[in-house]
Amino acid sequence: MNGLSENATHVVILDGNNPVSTARIINVGDVWRIGLVAVDKLMRGKRLGEKVMQVAIDYIINKAGNEIVLSAQQEVCKFYEKLGFKRYGEAIVFESGFVLVPMKYNI
Image (cartoon, rainbow, N blue to C red; front, top):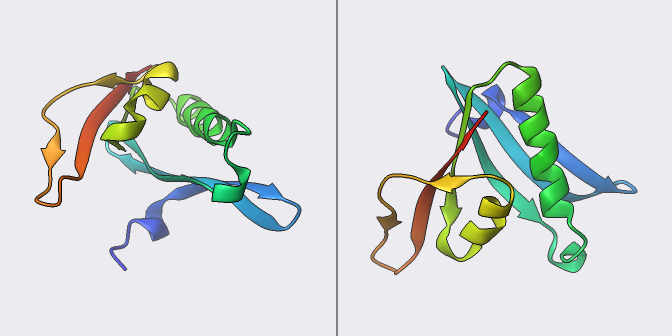
């Protein structure tokens, strides 16, 4: 394990006892990072991604965070843009064609 999860706050949305959406929040000095955002395939379309992200953003705001960053898969950038994130910097393109886009949310 890389140690990130041990120093992170995890937001989890449950359906009964079953986790159906999650996000990991890490404080990196003056910047907060959101990562590992996921929604169970069977629960998609119920706005759980928006809900888990809003809880994460609110948590960071309550901790007096100034800036939130994340690396979005290229195909879901519009999802994060609807939440107020903006693209910045250069995308990372892997040999496989997988693209990660750095995104920022200014508080």
